Image (cartoon, rainbow, N blue to C red; front, side, top):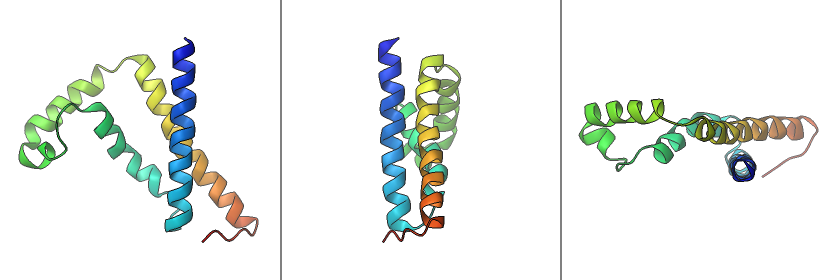
Length: 103
């Protein structure tokens, strides 16, 4: 249980930080929220990313099976990363609205 709490906190902070920096540099508030599913694909799948282009039938069917067989703990950890990206978007919006000019 302690490991789950640490992983949830780690994924939240990690994706918050990555999203905040990307949002600040690229000035695209919700960019990471759209990129996050691709990151999840890279975390969950067990084959190279190029397989999606060379053998898409195998890649997407295998990915579907792997997503269905994720445990509750894995889903909670990945969801906490997504919540971190969404939180970073709201923080950036709030800071820009408050008058802070970032890059």
